[in-house]
Image (cartoon, rainbow, N blue to C red):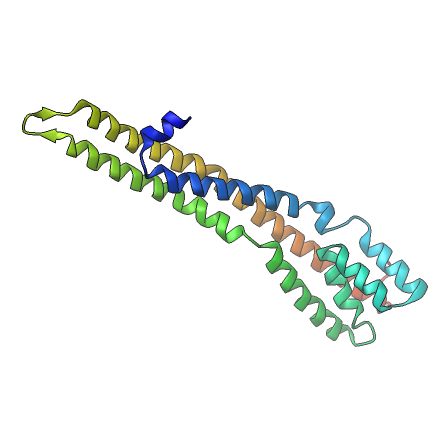
Length: 202
């Protein structure tokens, strides 16, 4: 592996750094965007049951909001349970916007890495081509410099694609996951408002 890095020349180092960052972000988002962590199963039913049993208190809200992003959205609605349906929904929408922003964390960076990696590889290819042309001289071609230029051009192109393809796949997967979570949180929050206002059964 180290011999490949040496053959690829100095343009490979930014690509290696980008690959390390991309892997770290993919692992972090995979852990952070687990469904059980974002949308705990049965949370809405537990919140409604606890509200009907003991009402709303600060300890309950603090515990709910600390549990999960969905808990924060539902907690925002419960804090305004004595207000009108419209005010509750506004509070939920505000909390939902903050939660959605937090779920999107690092995705812009991952998408940027996936987008620029082929360009970084192309830059390495240009460097390699410059070395290839530099190997030409009036007395003939320097085989070592020619071989090194070809290595730089091909390795950087390949490595850029190796980073970009999985990076783009994971970026699109995480974006779809976040969008799905946000929609489901909105649905559960609206359902809670309607239940607490007696417009529907739990």
